[in-house]
Image (cartoon, rainbow, N blue to C red):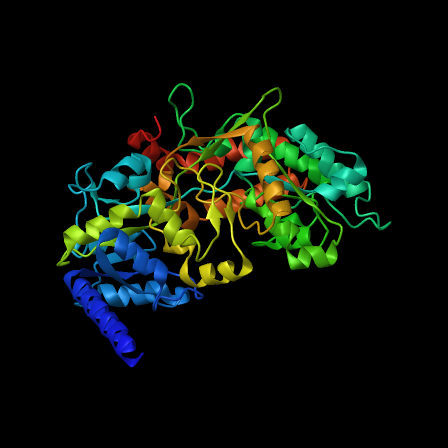
Length: 500
């Protein structure tokens, strides 16, 4: 027995030595990344699996997420830069790092021969924000979000015998019913349809034929949104809902996420700003919502359609959340390029976001992207995986990595799938490039902010919606004051020819 045990121990020792020798042959790639607090770097099997995929050892530094930018600034000012660098903000600081020679110029490396996966996946629109003086100094971390939607209290619709609204008129009718027909059945006049937090939200404006200011019309002409035909009709639509009581009378005091708080508290029946299909399941299971509305349900509706239309096109700029750069003085550029390129494969995207089959999840259907996992696997995934850990937060075909959002059971998943199918039958995305990528645009926009032009616009719109100034006064202000003030900014857009 002792002899057998000795043989086994000797074999294990030999294997460990062999493994150590193999590990010594591998290059170590260092990386700094912005990761959630729950993420554990040490002995992380997902990071190890990524290294195995790419034939290297990957060491990750994950500073506290709250001061990632501060730590990154310190690192970039040092003489010891990691090989792979997550740049959270592709701003002036990033551009200066590129001009100072700290970041590798990736322009000539982004080829089918050197980086086949990134070259296949990334579009010119997505790459645009990573350019500095026409050269490429990082690859973008692109995020595909679920479809935009407007969420409604499903139980309120059911009680009042109403359907999910699809057009602006239907929306106005439902909002008035939510405000006047006691949808929560408490006998008190204490509910409203909705509250405004963002005037020009895409879930509302497309019903009026409005488009972003950097998208030209059919004749190739650019017009600031507030000067486009249909904008006054849109504002009057909001004004009418305020005057008839469908709109929260204190809407102009609504700060960030306070409309969401009112939705959870059972005071309003619809939410439209920054809302996606995932919120259907997230909010229905939200502890605050359930506590206040134990019988409450949440349903999704499309971005509002123009009258007579079968579908609505929603303008959607690529969602670029920073980028990944390479240390210009890295001793392992070839290997680091390989690691970065692997991040744009579906396999690596899935690995970094949801981990290893059998360890952090049970199964993942490659077609529907429906994942199954136990509570124990979920806990492990929270430690070893994260959406923030991904190089690219989308599949190569631009679809979502996982269907169902945060659904944790079959009922939630079914609700998500039904909502997604319904909304996708009525809306589609129109991809366009945001004006923030145009050189000189941000300078002109900042000047409008500093000169008080934007704040004056918001004040005038507020006055009009609240009935304090007339339609003629509002239209005159937009055409004679606001639109002319925006001309320098619009000229920058026109000169760029963006989205033509």
